[in-house]
Image 1 (tube, one colour):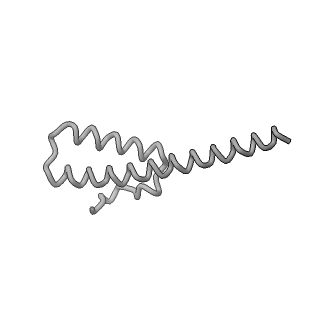
Image 2: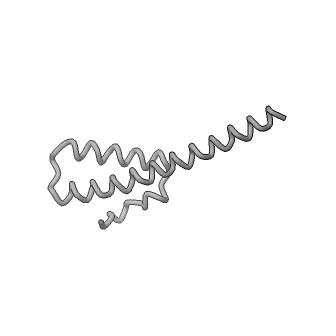
Image 3: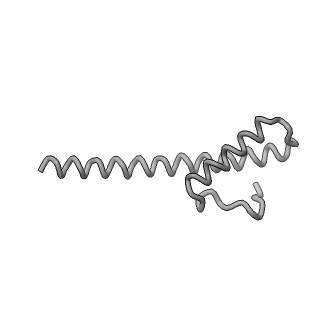
Length: 77
């Protein structure tokens, strides 16, 4: 898929920006007013954004779990 010139790579975007763009894509697709080719391009972009969101959430969850473990270790001492 070719990205528009103003579209950042999802990996370089913040979680909030990634989620906001994904929400815009979903609204556009649900509107049913797009041409087939545009719908496919947006869908592909949405899949990329979704993958990045999931990865960022998994990373955040792992970091929180690690921090909670550190706190529990400190409290056990």
